[in-house]
Image (cartoon, rainbow, N blue to C red; front, top):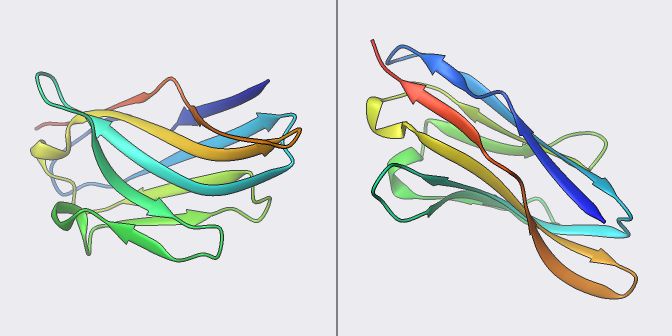
Length: 119
């Protein structure tokens, strides 16, 4: 089994910052790409940021310059540093990881963490 656990969400005022963490555990041989998605009420889930196995990253235009995705030193943890937060960043944030285990490569999802930006 593979588990992804997100943490770090919460309520902050506009202009504030949050750092989300995604920790993977289980029978993991290798983690390839990891991505953060978000889903606001009544909206489709959107890809926010992703980081490749090689370290390259990409972002949706609305968060460029404000969000930074990075891998932890353990390689099984990925962070999303979110600065200059706006009310429109309010959503449930999910991490998804492409994982190799026992010769099979599949995508696993976490349960999500709520981020609310409000004054």
